[in-house]
Length: 508
RNA sequence: GGGGGUGUAGCUCAGUGGUAGAGCACCUGCCUUUUAAGCAGGGUGUCGAUGGUUCGAUCCCAUCCACCCUCACCA
Image (cartoon, rainbow, N blue to C red; front, side):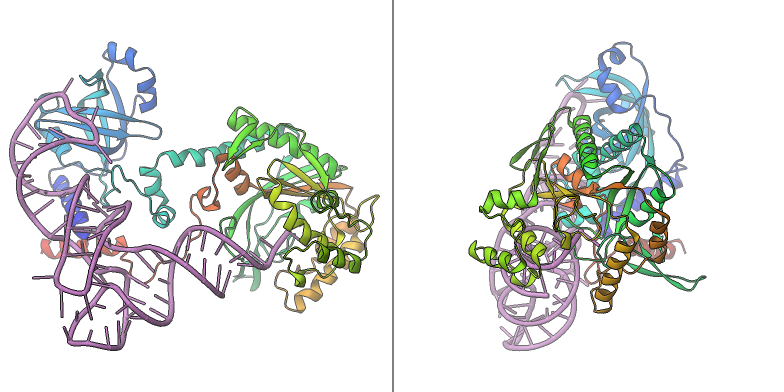
């Protein structure tokens, strides 16, 4: 490794000695490569002189000429460079070019004997010398750890994965366009908070030196957006980076992105219609159709999505209707189902229903399905159902067996909300690190009166996974969280420092 | 946290209780329409780390580190 870098570094020094800057400032392009390929015949026929820039990915020497593949943002093209045409200086320059170097080329287009569309170079500029060798030219970079740790290298040699991230951006843009059209106001609320809330999760804690107070990275922006509804905004939303100090796996990264939106004077049915419409538009915008592949499945986003209550769905799968049962009756009924259930979790009627639902219904929800009317015990931020005892006005949307959104008719009774905070406070004192602390100012806001409001939160990372057919959150994040490398790794900077030291010695 | 797997050259990977291998990359030479260009020559390595067993360990054992899968946890 050191030897490979040293060879390239020596080329840099040789260039500098002969007055060539291996890291120049600017190169004016006339075309991107995709544009050249699109209008190839016309540009070739008119012998227009074009200028392109990109990274050298392949290089073939043929005596007094070279062929090379150059890639820019979107496309690759072959360049042809021969001594007669470019002169000895440029020929020698290109002879020293390594795979991974970035070059600028000027020339005209032609088609080779083998039928390859090619740029005949008349002038060559080295734009950046790469000191680090590129991964193998055809095996590429497959080591998943290296792909996450050095995403830039992954993006260089696996250009198809760039598509996933472009789609991610387009998905967010489509959502933003939709919400703008629906007259939702995009807002920004604090990420750094002196008090966290709005979800059950352990926060990341930090310290503000000047104020000498503890601060937290937000775990949700719910409580701030609701304050804005109190303040009189009708429809607000935020693209929010949230941070949760919890386990990591295929579906969880400590830093992730959600969208939360709140809509005054609306209830959870209004939210469901809005969400359905939003997904329909986004899916169509990205795929041009409503049917998309995900793993072995084909997901059909053609609305309306199925709407079924949690209790109905349980009855459908188990034949048992838990409606109106006492806690004891529910436990007995659960026992009769002969499922392998975690008994410790089933501490009340709502938990029994949820546990059975998770075991029997959740994995079967492949096509978009709204599960509605959750038990009140497991829905502390949702308003009680207007007609049904022990239930709340809440839904979650499931697609491909994964939760894709969570919505309520929001709880806006300050007395009720205070009680729930006090309960949470007890849990916090008892050692439940995920319990929510009392947010006095939020209670104050509710005391001023929050109109009836529907709210929705949905994870962007998971939506992107769904729409790009990816199965790990790390594949839709440019830079997923990784542990630092300690033993056994030799940082590139150490190699460069060694070479710098050797050069200093040599110059004496 | 439990279970399973992986870690060898810049990259992709073989392999062995006795001085470490291939392809590509890289270096030297030849080749002016090649294309995974070709031909001739050259191994550039902390075998993830630390201990142990052994005359001798990359290999066997222990501990640790990183990553992946899975279960548990998860408003």
